[in-house]
Length: 397
Image (tube, rainbow, N blue to C red; front, side, top):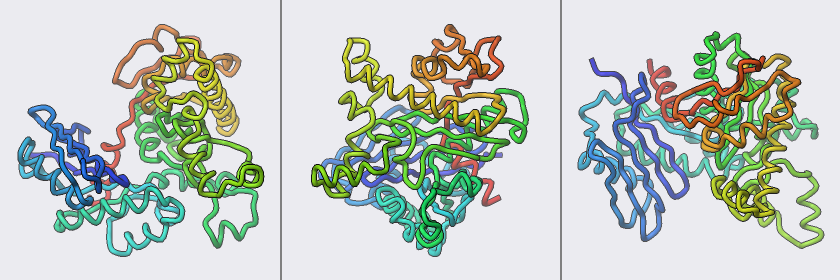
């Protein structure tokens, strides 16, 4: 009997990432990426049983991108007709307060996602493009939207509220939402399995470190605190995002430099973070430059690690008891130096990294803490596509 498969879709403003995922095992027999949608030189890169194939040419919109993806499946395999495809799962970035769980996509749901565009002007329009294209080409399959913000809807009011006039929240939705929820959901469950403890009895600090980065305090599988806020700009230092800054910075830059709000927003989101300090947003390049003695890269590394250590300490206090500190995401999974540096000096809290275990590269979930560490330190690869597939199948039954 064939296992249920889900076509998982992640639509960006000019890209479409797709993957056929076995919801039971997480295996992906076929996947691909369409880049530079809407430009004259678009690219489709497909991974199938025969390896990688590539198509170059103009792709007008997301619907055409889907058509090319389907063509790639038929031409280069695997054929979708050979699998029990039960749903299309869509990554949706911002669900606001409306969505605390995955939902079947309807016209009413797309209208609600559209209403939330002011909270995610870069992401929600692209998500809607992807949903529209997929619904046109797969009209008979259920479509499921899985929201990055949903996992953090368990935050208590004292954690999601900003100390601003209450009408800002009640009338305009100004509050902490948090992101990377699909990753946190997958990793928290996988971490509990690694520790051999029930999820509902496990307290975790999970750091999702990629080009975007955030950390969450997770009590019994429920998010109780997270570093990103109304938007993905708040919190940790990221590839091109500043993370935490003085809220008065916008007014200061406007008064002193005459910058508009849009210019300031762009600088903080696209020209700051590692890129602003080191001139590079790729962490591998930052580490290389640091090794060569580059002063900016050294400062970028130190600021990055210092900010992460502050959040780990703060979330330890929020939870009271911590069973494990978990690293995931491209940087979290691969940069051993970040893990050791971020937790250095926290031995009095019962946190101790084993240098030898930490330096081992592996694609599997593993512990890197010493035997003397009261708090486990783990590296758990995330799999957001599998999480979306699993949530979609759970929803449709």
